Structure formats: structure tokens, C-alpha cells
Length: 182
Image (cartoon, rainbow, N blue to C red):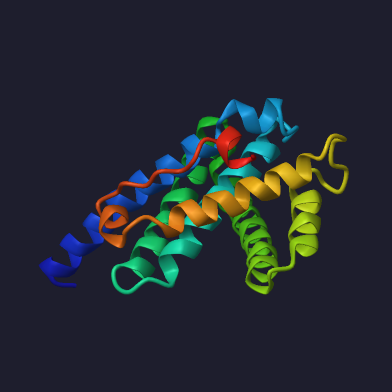
């Protein structure tokens, strides 16, 4: 691997972590948990991080270069972070890889369901995927699924308005969850 390849990889890696950090910040907004009823658990937080990362990756992967490389860098940053977090929680070295693989598979399954529904414009399928993944089939009363769907669609629209140049510099702006839910 030449020096130029290493420099490019390093640049994408840094930007990937910056973009991933913004997705995590958006996923940690208290409104998602207090007002929309997303479970404030490890699983609930994983689902919100995964949802925001999915939206960001969807935005990047169809762009011209360096979009796909940035999408991969965001994905890599997410699972590098998951590995570190599991180790910090005291998960043994021998089982970290297995747990990360389960998380990887869960992310891919969710991403496939969300993408299929959104690409088809099938809001019932998107609601069903959100119900199944975020609330494990038992959403809270009060229309939280519809509000979370509005968040997803508003964030998708917001991401579409941001330039590849800004994203490639590590700058991304998610809407506040409260604003996006309206």
C-alpha cells in the first residue's frame, strides 16, 4: 500500500469518526427517550445510533467519490466504537468478536428493512420495522411510532440538503429530534 493510500485512508477514518460522533449525539437526544418512548436501555440506544448511522450511510453511499468511502468509514467507526464500548463494559476478550458480530448482523437487518421501506415509499412497512426493532413489537401508546417515522424522514431530508464537501470535511448537521418529530 502506497503512502497516498494510507493518507487517504487516514483522512476517511478521521472523518468517519467525526460523522459517526454527530450521529451518536443525535441518537442520544433525551427527547427520543422521554417524549417518543424509545427504551432508555442499551438496546434502545443501539437502535437509535443504528438508525442515525443508517441514514447517514444511505446519504453517503450514493454520492460520487468520496461518498462511498465515507459511508464505509462511518460504518467502520461505529463498529470500532462498539468493540471499545463492549471492552469497557467488561466483556471478555474472547466474546467481544462474537458480540460485535451479533450487533453487525442486527444493524444490517435493520438497515435492510428501513431501506426497503423507504425506497418503496411504504410508510406502513417503515412503521412496522420501527415497531419491531425499537420497541420489539410493543410500541408505547401515544403515536410514538408515527413521531419516530417523522424523525426518520425529516433527518433523511435534512441530510440530503448537505453538501458532499461539508460531509467530506466531517461536518454534518442533524435536526433536533423534537423539531424533526413535528
